[in-house]
Image (tube, rainbow, N blue to C red; front, side, top):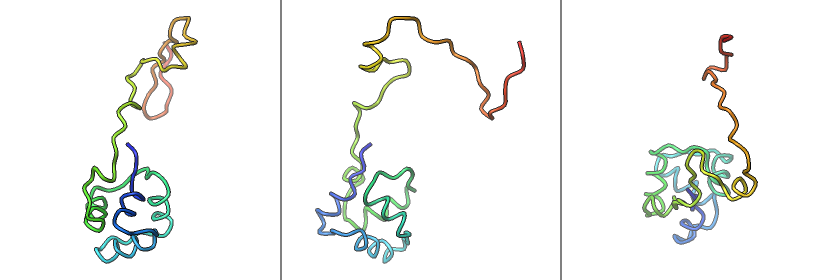
Length: 108
């Protein structure tokens, strides 16, 4: 997914992160300057669905205006990328089972 907040805000004549931050606060979503900077200038790592609702209300937009799908970036497990396909000549490396909690497995 591509985060499209700045363009969506610009289409609504909001040109500064602080303008959007004030609008969000008026609708009950208080965002710190650091988090607002991350939303404005980058792609958020995580965002609550409730926060997305407020952003959409303030900007008068749909979720599809903020999140642009990029299906060509999705790879299936084991699918070779262009770089791997060019250099793939041997068998795939063996899979080593690991515990989820980080502890080692008992000896075999």
